[in-house]
Image (cartoon, rainbow, N blue to C red; front, side, top):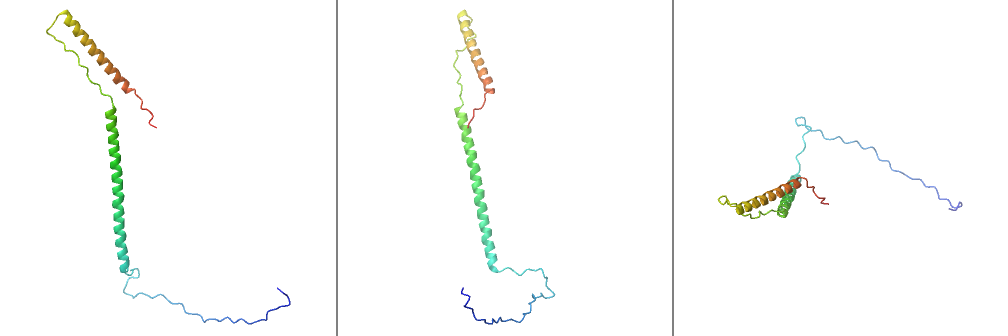
Length: 142
């Protein structure tokens, strides 16, 4: 700014308003309760009804989703059990000749002892496989 130029001095007038009295809240009549709330407007009742219906619908949907999730888990677990049962080996009994107690010839007795030895050996192998099944370890499924 140039020091030679000076603005002329002007008076500024600020209007002053007279003070206003503070309004007091309305006092309820003597015969009524001061804590009683005024009745809600009709619009709030309609909104409350809408929110209640929406809440019930959301609750039904969440319940249905949880139910179907548990049903699908139960079915998948059942199918896994069925797969395990189907995959487990089954032993089929081998037909063995029958022992005839009425025939007492040497040849027949030899055949009967052979059949008995074969059945005892089959029983021993079954018992050994049962014993080994008790010590089986589960494989890592990861």
